[in-house]
Length: 218
Ligand code: 5RP
Image (cartoon, rainbow, N blue to C red):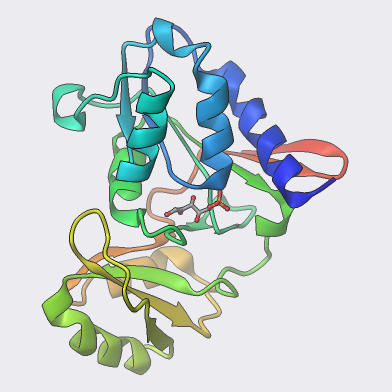
């Protein structure tokens, strides 16, 4: 099975969790794109849909799904999103697509967070995938120096601007053995908007597709 087919199946596996009357948050990325495809048939029964990026908003609208401002919805019943890495504690690295800030807000606002991914994303220790960090532009070099002191190798994602008008630093060479602690520590650095570690608010359920089909963790 190709990685793409695994992404498609993981996304399909999340669809039965979407129930009429729900407020739903939609993540960002190629796995979520398959979820959006399948959502078209179910969206009519939903109370409201919030989006984590301009890219997903466009894709939802193209399928006739109305997107609401999170400020007018209140908390979400369910948030569905992909990940760049996930472990069995349901901790995640996210932000490969640069949408980490809105993704973290939606995950935080959700009563249930389901993460969908192909099995290449499931790892023992997080950190092989460079950790994305959104920074305000003025703070980029200062934050990068602090990240070196924290043992990482920061690389500016040059030319990329987030939906919030900020920049991304991808931090290489971090073996993240204690994700909640590292998230808390990095959150203290002034100028960081969002750390792409989802540990203080992990997923509630992981739907991972491998060669043998879906594995549910959580
Ligand atoms: C975007 C994300 C995505 O969930 C992550 O990059 C996974 O993407 P894909 O489903 O394309 O592999 O965090 O900011």
